[in-house]
Image (cartoon, rainbow over all chains, first blue to last red; front, top):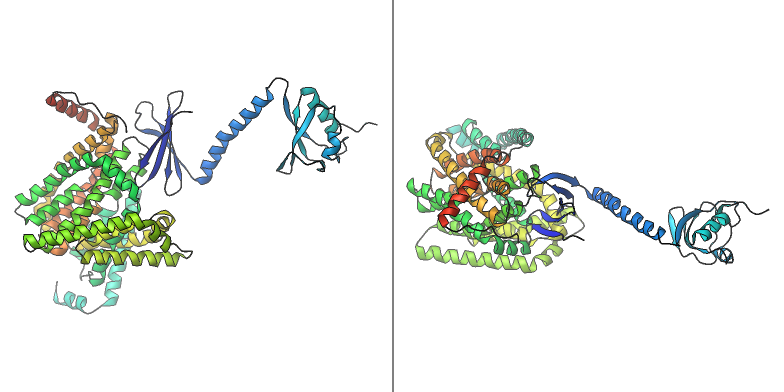
Length: 163
Length: 411
């Protein structure tokens, strides 16, 4: 991570800035009043800011989320590219073999080769669901395992019940 | 003042006063809007209104109430200025910016002092004029920096540093001037000055050590309670300060420094509008005290003083920025930004006018501030010409010094 230079601006707030790998200087002023200014320094006149954008609280949060979300996706992609390991989101379909099963019953399929590490239900994420947790139509199971195992889990949670 | 005007002023002719104030208020509102739209500070407008009303009005609207209002205006101006700073900021800036602050004082105080003495003024009046030409306007400059999106620039900390040092210097200068204005023997003056400075030092220590506790004590759910407590404390301290010769302005500034945290933010929101009204009253009242006829004789002097002290500010500002390791364009921007004079100069001149120490002080200060309050922002916006000029002067000075001065590394 680059060095962030912190400068106090008496009567205004705090300014933080750093230089990107590409040689551009970026900064931010945290005003005491609450809002923030995003600064992009001019290449030709490195002391002056070519672009100054005023960000209110939610603007700053949105920008932060945008920059941060990218990082999360990056981490997930890293996991996904671990040789032999797959992570996937499996929607549970009503009427499938395991819709209505509890986690314990699902776990009975020992030879699947994949585990459900979390379940997403209506915007809520339930990590490591307990044994008596019942999968329902509309849930999304987060599965981790070998590629074959995740595929089998897919069938269990999505595929038609065996005749 | 004619017989009727005197009669009107002596009995409390409330309707006439109200109408006069109302008209003045609307006029000020119109001018403030014009100022905002054109990007200028409204302060010169207020001065002009005061001067114009003083010249044209059939009766005198300046009553005891207006005078009191203008005193409160100074108190609120300085209080809001003090709110901007916290105690750690002040001590840090003092250490870092002292050399630039000293150059700023020497270069910009001297022209005013010299002109006052050359004009044959009372030495105290000359000291006041020195103060008028010395202090840059924190209000105008803060607005300029924000409007021109220069708050993030690398030269801005050096600009702000000079302003902080000037504000701190006022804590010594204003009591000094107040003591000098009271007059008397040298011993008596020295005595009252010592008392004043000791009181200011005590107040500063209290502000720094107990500021947090005071802030928490004032804080309350109800806005009304906070407003009344803050205003009450402020007026009390300012009044006591004035009594001790410290000058109410300094007392108000220290109360502002003492308050911090959430209370400071609320005080800013609640007292801001009051500050605007009373500060406007202060500038108008100052304008009212100026006789229009007294301006033409001193106009040439005001212009000359403005030109000279613009150059001195450019030099001291350029040097302050160069110490921060900023490039030539940044130095030019910093120099041009510090030229603005405004509210502080009028506060200092107001002290002299109230004491009646020199009849030319008021008109000269008003004309001087009008020229610079209107002209300086133009200079700040178009500073390009200063870059080659300043660089060339720098090289000449370097050659003269025989050694190439290295710019100080960025701290």
